[in-house]
Length: 256
Length: 269
Ligand SMILES: Nc1ncnc2c1ncn2[C@@H]1O[C@H](COP(=O)(O)OP(=O)(O)OP(=O)(O)O)[C@@H](O)[C@H]1O
Ligand SMILES: [Mg+2]
Image (cartoon, rainbow over all chains, first blue to last red; front, side, top):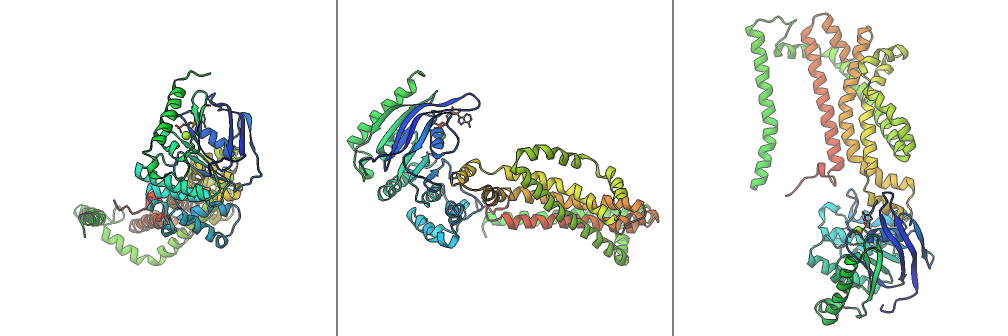
């Protein structure tokens, strides 16, 4: 999965100004390439979530354009929010079934896909549980399963593991990379952790705030599977140093 | 049984025992006041006399109670249909909500006792007039609560539905209505009591015009004839009915929400 393919989605000079005058994004140029694991890294308030939502088609950019290079429909985007965002009145199964239900797939016809996706995130035994009966990490996995159940071309994740403890986060990081390697998705992953982005990504885009823009780009060429040994290796440390430097520069840089 | 369960059980017992003790004290005090001051029954009957009257007048009170109860539930049914229907309509469009919500508020804040006589004039059937009055007071809490619930669906979930190209109907059916459930059930609990009050007030107004067959009419009639023990017996029936209606809807709400909503969940920590 190293060699990133042709562009899947292209952002040309994308800007977003909110009604209250805040310029959340300005002049964003970015190609999201097929099969890459792209991280958007930046300090709080630099417009990462805004960019992700625009890519998902939630809200209109106030300038520029976002173009898909391939045909895409309602089931080609998976979105994972920072919070699990589950329906508390529905079981794990029904939560994961939701995207298919909205596409008009009957329950019986969807069951195999839903169960397979639940197995993928290791939650088969909990298919009839309600969200309140799950731990934070398990809820997050349900949320990921829901994003995966339509087999999307593009998976958008907004700091999905930010609220989790480190051990759970490492575990879910590994699971996610494993899934990404074996399936043919493209992932855009928002984070403010340098370490997480280096561990996961094939490419990292560093953003700066006020106005939100891209200030640096890093390719992380280390091949997958990376495994826990990578977390203590010299190349990992070198990448982390580089990316941290860009991030520090981004936070000091005066607005253009 | 561990300590926590024991204390929970004790709380539960106290919850029943303490009000019961208070009730007994009040009844005994009431009885003593009546006996010691030799108050005549047409001024203040003792609790035993009220109980006796209750049994003796059962033949009159029971049919009247049925009339009031049927009216209450009929009004409530129409209030649920009207309140939920309007809430869904309002939730579909801000235009509709802005246009009509103020009138729902006006209907709510105008004292029923002031408009009940008018309704009785304009509507031929007393029965229907009373029904309308009960409906007026019962429907607003259902409307406003349900509307609040429909509009309080998680914003991110709404986005998620949009992402998958959900139709308006799907968003309503799978997201807004389930989100509104706890609010609707809360409104229903309030509306149940109000429907009873509305029915009683309207019957009272109708009763002063000599028409009526419900409990309120019986109270009025007994009051005219100085049959105070019967007034008390009928009053006790009304209070009990109100309590039962509240308990019924609390139970329904609990059953509907116990799987997922904070208000009805049994915590194990
Ligand atoms: N709906 C909105 N209305 C007005 N301003 C908004 C809105 N959403 C975001 N903003 C502003 O846009 C800017 C970027 O917000 P955004 O949520 O994209 O940041 P972020 O990079 O995701 O931050 P974080 O890491 O804290 O999640 C912020 O200054 C924020 O105040
Ligand atoms: Mg964010």
